[in-house]
Image 1: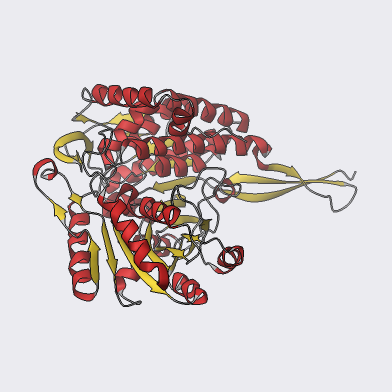
Image 2: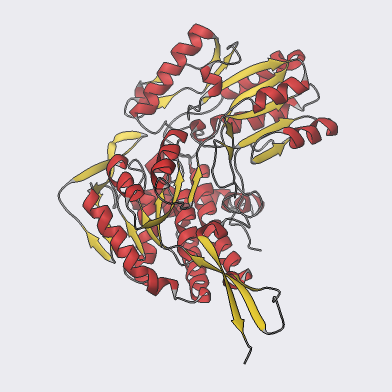
Length: 523
């Protein structure tokens, strides 16, 4: 068992929150010296720069150029894959205890510079400082937990019962080879590094293609580790998904893919990758996550939990609550409280101390928000929000209001499709069984929550809900905030393919294949 990082919680417990904010502000100030610099590709242990680059701008203030990255080609991707293939033998022969030691050291390294890394995330993808630190904590937890899992399982080598007295047998889990790692923008550290670590610590080699909106956090990881392992064991290739990502998925020398992103891209990638051969494709592909609020619920906890799950990081989490089913006789009370609390959320530059909600990630997200609002006005009722914020401090970023919608038809596509926005649909129910059915009436099955004081209802919820990560009466967040080691993060139905959760006991085994070894002692 590892001790989770929990930086903010420890600051509260130790009454050092002022020191936390001071360190974060100092980290922000120091980042000014890094703004606008040009980053390299990292292929075969070498840093590669060239003229064709793309700019990474802060979604909070697009006048801020965070950095410039190479616009890699298919040829660069192929070079990285070849380097990873050639490094596989050397890295796979590295004893598991050496890999464990390296990842514990890397976790300590990240912990020592956590404020700097969190500040990068806040500027890079618009998370407020507490959410950004929470992501870095999760990253550190992944590094330590996977090292601990590999160590606890002794490299996944286990004796088995011999078939007869003259034989000695064992089961050995071995790496596949080259893994392509394709993470999303919303967790540019935790998901990118978590997936990369899963592949790398199990002695596979890696080609990492970060999201183009948020490549800086991924660079921090590769830069911290690539000199300490065989050249080519990890490679960083930046650029367009339809060029670099596609090249990784289509290359026959890639043995496995770990992907997090939309269902459409994930399913397309899975079909392409496994078209000719059965190969592992680990994916998490979003959610349309429900919360059920019954008439016995503590409405203070319920509204807190829903608000944090729906509007934390602007709903741009796979686990975000995007639909709520409230028992009819308390629906008005619930809405009044929820709207009142939502009105109080401070929207602004996410790295400022008191900001709760920053921007959405880019122009496409803002346009998607505007379209959703138009449809909600036409087919339902907006009880709060619905505006793009463009004036004053908001004029150079992608800011929108958190939005609460009611009275949509129950099969409306805004209730069915993942939006990845601060956009919450609230529906009423009269019968608890019907609430469960509506909650399950989705192609997704990632997270779900309930607020009820009725133990029978809670038990029925856990028994019948079709989701991988479930919560009851969780005021800190109704559907988000799974903690490494405690709450493995796994999607059912269209939310995932493997059925094994990141940060859980079964995650690393997905990057390994079993070999049975038998030695016969007969003479």
